[in-house]
Image (cartoon, rainbow, N blue to C red):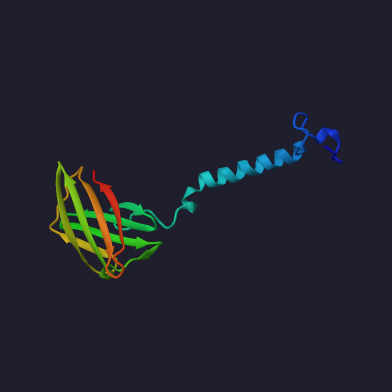
Length: 149
């Protein structure tokens, strides 16, 4: 193999050009800094805010955030898609509640803004709740699963 570089910069085994040590150190340092920045700033990689806005429990399904809130008067659900509130008037929501082997389905009613309500619905601690959201126009469905403590 013919190469115009000094022999010190050729890999002694493969006889291919090697990266000079100073370039290797710079590249390794750059990769270490970039990895640390990504590791310590994982929130920057997430789409939108995943903190509950109403004191409920949050789950994500794709870009859609579901916030389920169990209140003394029933259950409330808030829907946000890519940081924008999704109008409940254009959607249908239902809960599938599994508790101690019993499964119950509850239709939720659209309320103001991005809120759905299921008044007088009780959910026992330890229950599994699946929320199914359906777009009334396209019939597209998305869902999220919660286990309540």
